[in-house]
Image (cartoon, rainbow, N blue to C red):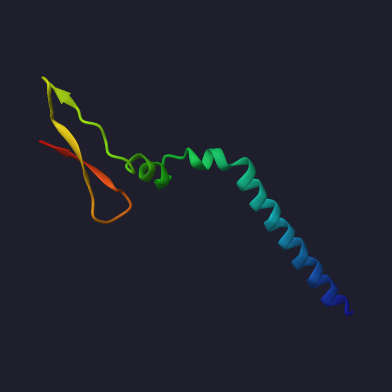
Length: 80
């Protein structure tokens, strides 16, 4: 095998191993921080996946939930 080809293949192997190590690090050790990040839209989608409860004032509800037809959020808050 040519010396240049051997060096290029060793460099490519090293880069692939570096990518695998970084992916393992992100999935194993930074997963909790990424899941709790305030910019993570999945938390909002999970929050609005179920109908929201009514807010009761003087014995009658002043809010409710209405299903949406499209988008990521399945329910939205409605006000009287």
